[in-house]
Length: 248
Image (cartoon, rainbow, N blue to C red; front, side, top):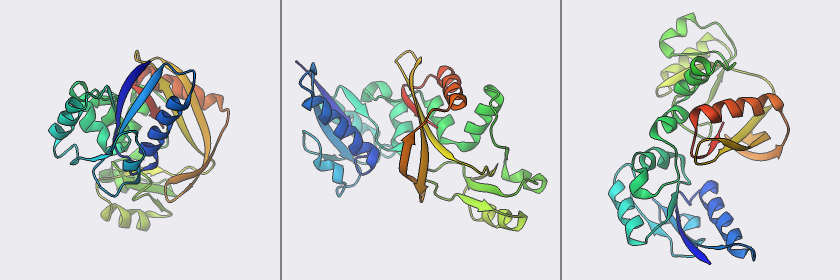
C-alpha cells in the first residue's frame, strides 16, 4: 500500500478541514490502495483543523509574506501534494507551484477568478456568455440599471456586497468600497456550481446546487439539474483548463 503525504492549508475554515475529512475517508476505505498522511497547516494557532490531521498541525506565516517557509516545510516533511484550503493561498501557491507540489491552477487562471471585473470581462468578451451588465466606477454617471450591486473587485463570502436601489445609494457605496465594481442585480434563484477537470484541463464532472446563503456563506444547498448551467460550465472549463476544480 502506497503512503501519500498531503499538506492542507487554511484549516481554520470549512474547505480546509473538509479536505482533511475526505482524506480520512480514504484511510477508512478497506478497498483503497493508498494510506494518506495529512499535515494540517494554518497561519493562526487557534484553528480547529490543526487537530484533525494524522500528523500534528503546524502554524506557518502567511504565504504572501514568507513563501520560503512553506517551501521548507514541504521539503522537510517530503510532502507529495499541498492542497490550498483558503482562497488567499491560491495565488502565492500558484506562483510557486512546482516548489510547493501545490494542486492549484496557473496564476493567470487564479487572477481571472479572483478579480470580479476580470471574471466578467473574460466571460463576456472571451467566451461570449450572457452575463449581468457591469462597469467600472468611473462610468457610474452613465449607469442607469437599478437596482444594482456595488462590491469589491477582490474579496470573498459576500463581504462588501451592497444592493443599491437608486443612484444616491450607488454613489454612497462607491465612495465606501475599496476598488469597486458596479453590476446589474438579478432577481431569482442562486446557484453554486463546480466543474471538475483532469490534469489535461478536460471537464470530467459538474455539480450544480441550488443555494441558500446567510451572510455570504451557503447554509443549504441541494443538487439540481440545469442544462444551461451545465453547458456554461463545460465552456468555461475547456477554455480556462483549471487544475482540479473551479467554482462559479
